[in-house]
Length: 150
Image 1: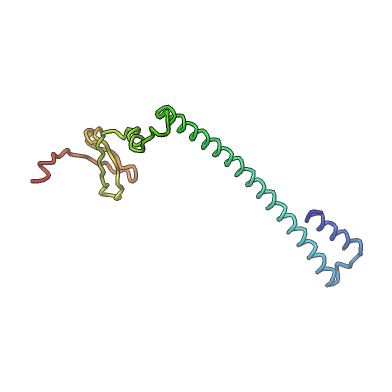
Image 2 (image 1 turned 135 degrees about the vertical axis):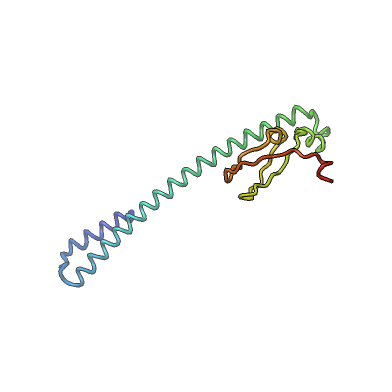
């Protein structure tokens, strides 16, 4: 029997006993039965919401498992192509497999908001950017390292 059914049963018992709801004891019992009914409905709603959240979490977990399996298979296939025998595997070679590029990056601090922005050579050559944090126009002058030292 659910909480809602039990609450309805108690209300039926009270009505069947023909309690006088004009007297203090009858008013108290009627108020308690109404309270129990409201609590049962609230708990029922909470249980439904908890079940819905649990179902959503299960679906997200399944999706993440699928993605993880896909990524693991892809990594395994890449390693398998590169190394026919496990004895040939070398961690240094694995690090070299990733091309981090030879691009020089610069960090610029916005004088207005203090945001640190990373820019590349091409952006530096353009002469400026707009700060993504505060919208301030930032201009760059290329200074040779020799000029900086003097």
